[in-house]
Length: 415
Image 1 (cartoon, rainbow, N blue to C red):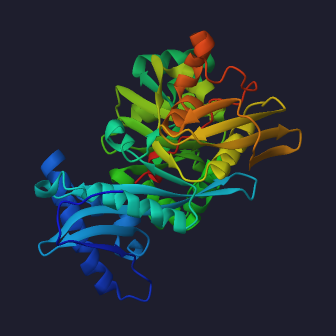
Image 2 (cartoon, one colour):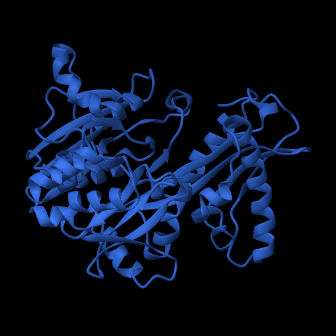
Image 3 (tube, rainbow, N blue to C red):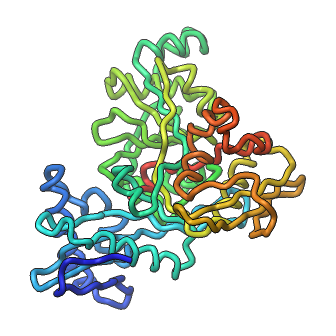
């Protein structure tokens, strides 16, 4: 339960239907953006969510976010927006419904009143009512632990300098191939004839979260720029660069063997001294090629999640892992405990030759984990530390290859 230190407030949930006029949607969205921009500008400097996240706040997209707000006689005092996502496993009908939590803001004069705790509870209730199995957000880890979120997943960050990529290409390719410019980069616009083909390349990722309709505008998030990769005029892939061009946010290349040369030509064309590239742990072919090219790499936690439906999330993540790594055929029972309560919900996870199944069970648990502990142990780098703890290893009987479970989304999917 939450307590709000203000007797004159109103909670409201707003989602703008398509039959509402565009002018009405614009006026309501502008009021929300004015509030969010003010709060974030006070904390972080000038902020414009309309520019940063057109996929949610462009006039044509304003019916997509669900706004949860607290108002009083002075207007909006606190805000949480939910952006719906459907995670799809490639080549399968399996889908995981989720919401990305964003634009989390409280008026500077109203911090400490309990507004955010109230809105987080309302947002969770709303997500559950919409059939969502998962809530995702980014931000201060310890702040959001209070609301039931924990860091999940592993991403690999590669740091590439011009010297690295030059030496790498000299070892991999013939001399004439390295010295000449092979790949060219053309910035993509909304009406580009290449977009359908680019989406096809994206769609072959193991897990996707964008429809064709969402693809282009999502790539524009946070002022990123998208370039078609061309060889002799033919499309061979795409790259998405951050606004400062220091980070390669997302890419797909038809022939992964060409990746190092693509990076070499990219850095030369944009006169980049260094480039950071991040990929998920499931992108094994990309990891292999990026490791050749980098000066160093590191493993980091990805996003923060709150699991609403453990059965659905366990099943989806195990199927995701099974697509790129061999999982031992076995059963494993995980007990999920909420905080310090003694009662647990036990889930039987089964991997057979034919697939994955997850169900509630009365069987004794092989391991019992508190909800936040479960996320950080089963999905992050901390999984690798457990065997070193000896008798304190909480997953010592886990079947081979099952953990850590994957969870990583490109920046274009974040909110």
